[in-house]
Each structure stands twice: as C-alpha cells, then as structure tokens.
Length: 232
Image 1 (cartoon, rainbow, N blue to C red):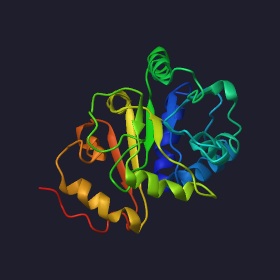
Image 2 (image 1 turned 60 degrees about the vertical axis):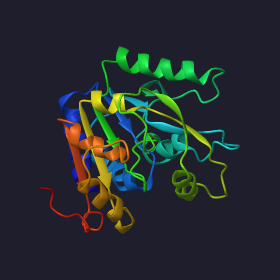
Image 3 (image 1 turned 60 degrees about the horizontal axis):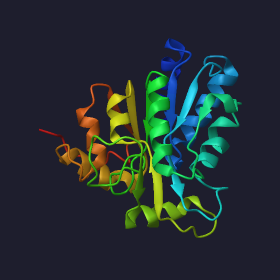
C-alpha cells in the first residue's frame, strides 16, 4: 500500500516538478513518507520545485506541538528538507478564521489547483475533517468535530487534548484535484471500508465521494480490504 502510493506520487512529481501536493497527517501515511524520503535520497524524486498546501488542522488546542502541521513536518517536511517557502499552511491564529478559509481557497486557485491529494479515512468515513452529513460542494471551512473524531483523535497526542473544531479543505477541493488517492491500512479500517464499498455515494460516508471522481484511486492493504464484498 505505502509503496504503491509513493510510486504514484513519484510519477506525478516527475511528470510535473512544480505541482501542488496536499498531504495528510495520520499514521497511515507514515510509511509512504519514509519511502518517499528513500526515493529522494536515491535521486529518483526531486521535490525542490513542488508546492504543498495543508489539508486540515485541529483548532482550539492549548498546545500546537502535536497538531497536524507538526505531524507532517516531523514525518515529511523536515526529513525531506522541504523549504518553508514551498509550504502553504493555515493561519490558525488568524483573527477571522472564515476569511482565512477564503484565503486558502484563493491561494489554491491562484496556484492552478491541487495536482495530487493524498487522503486517509476516519473511523466514521470522514476524509480530511469533512465529517458525515456535510455537503459535497463546500470549500475550505471550519467544522465542529464529531464525537468519533474527538475520541479517535486522542491517539495523536501524548496527553489528553481538548478537541472541539477543525479547519479543513472541503469536498470542492477533492472534486477539483487532478488525482486523489485514498489510503486505508490495518484491520481497524476494515469495517468502515466495507461500509464504504457497500454504499452508494452519500454524505453519510464522506469517503464515498471517491466513487464520483474520474481520477480517484483507493489503495488498501489486505487487512483493510478483508471485509469488502464485491460491488454489483
């Protein structure tokens, strides 16, 4: 799963060195990031002209040292020596967060759109922080976190975190991205992946948006795929 994802990213970068990438925080992506570092060190991929836009972020944290930006920096930006001028991040301390969302939307548009977006899937089917029952046509937005996300999100913090809201790219960015890769790994994702593949596209399971995408790619390991039945 991780190798195949890294190969897609390698091919995208080699095809368009100045592309705009959107990469997630989350344990599923860690091995992919390690492989991309190995590829960089071997000279088969060069990120020096690439640009990166943040996917999502926790809001209202007392301590931001373990937030999404810090996660991607720890496992991708720092190991691969990505420059700060290549990274477009949310200003979570902006006085007006709604205006900050609009700024990110404009920035993505000005950069020509996202060429490749990598996503994970939440236990309730969310992608980025697009929670269930939110519209598929939304742009960057502030969201109230579901109880599931508040509970599962604790695993990213060494001490308990007060999770309330998030800022996230919306489904509009997912639809508009050149290529979207959804990764799912581990037996804990088997149930939601089975539900996703048994469902028609619906906001009840945001990840079903993948069935709408012309260039949507789902990559799973055997454990995550173990409960999926063939779709009609």
